Image 1: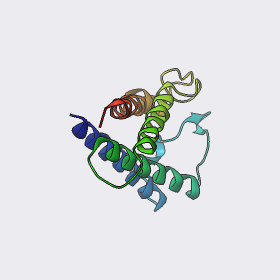
Image 2: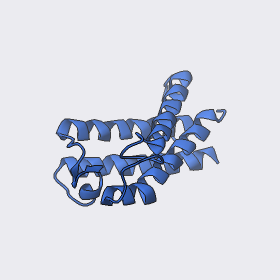
Image 3: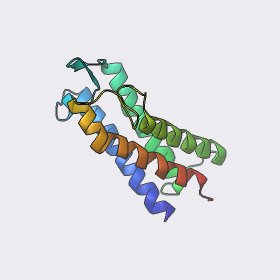
Image 4: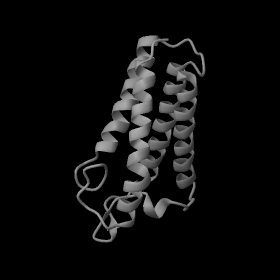
Length: 141
């Protein structure tokens, strides 16, 4: 069961990493609803370095999850992988909770295209990834 969950979580993280690489290379699908909005404008504008960093972080998260779930085997310290998996879980659970303004369960800014996508997809996905990573982190291997 853990291997199946790990595979699913890692594949979603790989997909999200690939999406950020696609945006980095100039792709535009989904980009217009990917950032919180303030007064009709993006609340921030990530540059190429930021987008690349997110892509690399998501790729690393996929690797850590796959290692902890036993989907892949590498000679890496078990405690380090377990800590990394808890870090992934914490990051996504914190994302799901949000910043209490633009993103997450407790967002106050609503009525924007981003807010609608956040409520229907981004926050539930972050919550699912966080819970999945926590289950994987907690599992005995």
